[in-house]
Length: 203
Image: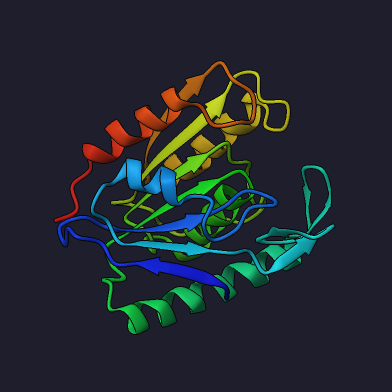
């Protein structure tokens, strides 16, 4: 998979695995990640699927309607890539934090549902429920920050609450942060995610 890895300067920090939104690339989330966790190693990944020339992490049938078979296959593909990247770059696979926006948050959520504690923590910004009808793997010990907008035209308040309940019922410690903007990221949302991540323990 096309990606970029930047070795961090602080070994006490987790490695951040970055998942962009539709039309993004492996560089898009780097500035946000550097703000969220200064000194962390960063692994930015480009989605392997193209939709009208725009990279995504899995196919969709229409707006908000996912190709679930492709989503599952891409989830397993990403897990294999993360295993390979850990071996190649030498980061600790037990100390990973996912940071995903929109489509990237959805694939990160799918990875959590399929693989449980693959990430010790996750920052999911404007995510949807990736899969229904799938009981998530146990998520005890995993902390999740969900950033959501009450005016988000793509992700309803009800869907955000459904994802919150789904992850929490699997044992995750979920923090839900609401803001007034739509589907875009805001500085206040990023600051809230940073404050939350600062409060996590990665020992």
